[in-house]
Structure formats: structure tokens, C-alpha cells
Length: 264
Length: 264
DNA sequence: TTCAAGCGTATCGCATTGTAATACGAGGCC
DNA sequence: GGCCTCGTATTACAATGCGATACGCTTGAA
Image 1 (spheres, rainbow over the protein chains, first blue to last red):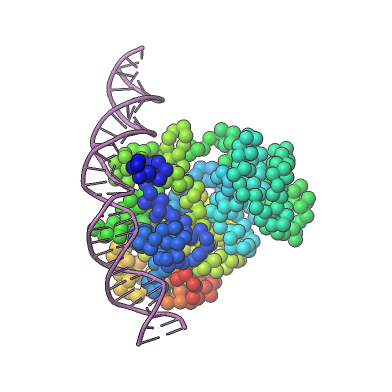
Image 2: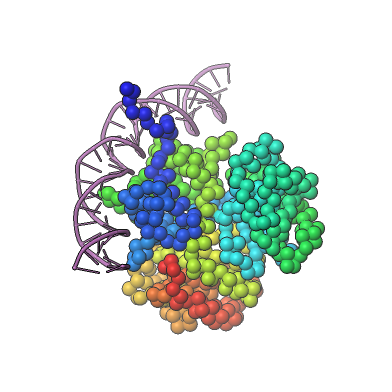
């Protein structure tokens, strides 16, 4: 008999311990506020010993906090530091920041900047002066690329083959009853975005909400980010909202495009 | 500038590989936008091989991004996800969020929430409608506890022994020519904060800026966070600013205090 | 053009380091 | 009171991370 076969040839440069540690931090992506050892072990698919060693290490480093009474863990303040370092180094976000503030003041509506990250976009700037759902004010939140206005606007700037690839790998589960989630419908919306310079979604992410999104193109001609303006159907018809903000948004995104930022 | 670092030795539960990997992410706390392998190795005090393995692993996981052309690394979008998970799970920040928005609207000035973290505070909410220095709008930024208005307001809620301990371990380097940085002066400011319910700093963090800060006390009677209102000396005298916003701020902080939040 | 310096990448034998089974004491709940 | 399940601590073992080394490439000065 041949020698025992190792699990699929692994990458000799890959540090599995690091992945396991980061998975512990990732265990909190379910929204759990705090977890005990067993829950963390389960969430990470490891045993209790492993969870013990990694929570212990992460706690010492400040990436995890341990309640002295309940012995349960929650994410540590230090994770905010990483975001800070990411954002301060991102020239595109920095350049967009004053523009978004201005756009918020000019429109009075909620204005966001999202970054393109393959199947999802994630928010990097959120400018709002209204009271919103807490979630809707947070940086780092991910949304599917295919269903969001900004995501579709970015897809409109990609070659067809890449769009197909992304749609194929995406889970096209609708977020609301009004989410357009059939490939043909999505492609049509992408084509419209290509023509108009912005995409419009009506109650596709949240009921009662209308959003326009437009892509920021980088110096290589690829979509890097998108800006969004979101409003309420209680105050606007979709048509009026689009006419009022669509062109302004597209022009603003255009102004931020084609710059060579040092870190891209 | 660097966060609490405790590298314990001969702890059988400590996973050194995890620490090394996180140190690679921490290498970007200098503000560098992108680094090559050698720079990362140097910043982490390791050799090139080590840097190679960890950057490789972190890139695969999305916590680091590698430029295809220059082969240099920068922080990955995924670090924002950790912040998102931290903030969404933090009930105190969630409860404070609408209050801060309201406070911003009522005052028209820049309003922040900071979290107490031993020698430093770090910002968790920033509400502003004005154009500011980019840095000043970012979450996750740390400031010394002893020199900031919110920090001093929180120190005012701690037992004297703990205050002494914190001052002793802090680096009392002044941030501006007007930073009060002698222990006696700091203690006096803390005593004033204790009496008034808020602390006032005039050009101690940035020239031209006046800030009032007040502490949010948790259910155990300990300071957990602080809210700040910051204004410009171009628009206000320090006196007027204090009279106008100090009492309002203290009252607001009081309203957010003494709640039992599930994750603390 | 040549050459050297510095880069990123790949390889590999070795021992350090992380692993996972186990045990123990402390609470909490029937 | 007894039975879980929790967090914590210990240990023998070998898988895994380590780091020296080598190679091919680009760059820039000679």
C-alpha cells in the first residue's frame, strides 16, 4: 500500500495558525455580541482547546475583550484601529470625503461611498444628518454587488465576461419582494446604468428606499468605488428622485474618476 | 501612538504566530500607504521569510492587498468588516448614536464619541457636517487620555489611585504649545471636570480648537466613553463656547450613563 | 551592453511551536 | 445533593511554522 495520503497539497507558505486566529475574530460576523469558549469553537469549527489558545492570545493583544464576570468574549476596541489605518491610507476615500460632505449638504439626503470588492461592495463613508437605522450608518457593511445601485453601476464599467463571472458566482437571493434578481433583469439594469451614467434601485435593498449610484473609475479604467444617494419613497417618487439626483451624482462620480492614486 | 502591547514569554497558551501576523497588520500604523516585503520585515522586526509567509497568508484572507504591478502590500478592505462587527455589537455606541446626531444638529458643531481604553481614548462616532481635516473624521483614531477633554472627564470618574497609575504610565509629551502636560496641571483640570461635569481644553490637541468633553458612566460606576463637542476659536471665545455647550453636554452624557448594556 | 544590487519567489531539513486529549475545580440547574 | 457544563491548566507528541538559502527578474549606474 502507498503511504498515507496527505490532504490536498497545501501551500507551504500558508500559516494556518494565523487563519485560525482571524477566524475567531470572524466568528463575530453573525452579529453576536459576546460568545463563550464553546460557541466560538463551534463557530470556527474547531475544538475547545484551539478556541482557548486563540482567544487567550487575541485578548492579550486587545483584539478581543473578555468580561471578567461572565468570562465571555467580545471584539476588542483595537479592531477599530485597523480601520483607521486602512482609511487614512486610502487616497481615493480621502479625495472623496469632502466631495461627499458637500453632496450631502447640497441634497440633504443620505450619501455613501462604497468600495468594489468582487461579489460585494462595502461602505467606507456614510454621510447622513438624519436618524437612521443604526446599521445603515456603519462603515464596513457589505452588500451584494449585483443588487445595489452602486454595485450595478460598477458592473457597468466591467467587461461582459467579468460581469458574467460575477453573476455566476453570486447568490441571487432577493433582499426584498421588489429586488430584481433574475440574470436578464439585472443585465438590463446594468445596460441602463451604462447608458445613463448611474443606476437606480427602487426598494431593492430596503422597502421604502430609493437609491441612485454611480461608479468612480480608476486610472486603469476599472471601477474602484461608487457613490450613492438614498432617499425615502415617503418624500419622493422614484421618478422625481432620479431626475433630481441622477445627473448630479453621475457628474460628481465623473469628477472623482480617472485619478492615479498612489495606493492603487 | 502604538496600542497596548504585551508580549508575554513562556505562556503555553500563547500563539506566537498569530501575534506575528497581526503585527504585520500593525506595521501600517505608521501611516504608510503601501510597503514592500523588506519594509514590512523591518517594521515587524522579523526576517524576510517571515514577512513573506504572513503577507502571503493575509493576502489570501483579504486583510492585505497586493498590487500586481509593484508587488507592494497595503491593508485590505476586509479590515473594515471587523470594525463593522465591533460597532454593531456595541450597545453603548448604538444607544449614543441617535443622541449624537441630535446633538450635532442642535449645536452645529463637530460631535464625537470616544471610548476609554486605558492610556488612550479612541473615537467610535464622529458626527460633522463641516469640512475638516480628513484625519479628524475617522473612526478608530487614538488620542492620549490625559490630554483630551473627554479623557480627562473620564479620569475624573476614576479613583485617585487609578488616575495616578495612568498618569505614571503615560508619556506626557505635549501635542501643542498650549497642552497642559505637567501632572499638577492635569490633576487640576481633572478636579475641575469632577466639579463641573465636563472638561474643557483650549488648543491642547490642535491649535485653534476648543473642546468640551463629558464622561458616560456605565452601570458599574466606571467611565466607559465620553462625548465631545469641538469648535473653532475663529468663531468662538473659549468662555462663550464653554458656557453655551458645557452644561448641555454634561446633561447629555448624564442621560446616557448608568445603563446596563448587555455586552459590558 | 554589462554587471551588481535588490527585489519577490520558491525550496527544504530541522526543531520549535502549536496541537488536542485530558484532568481538575467551580459554579449552576434540576 | 448530584450532575452537567463551564473555564482553566498541563502534557506528550508531531505537525507546522521556521529561516537559511538559492534562483530569476527588474532596475539603474557604469
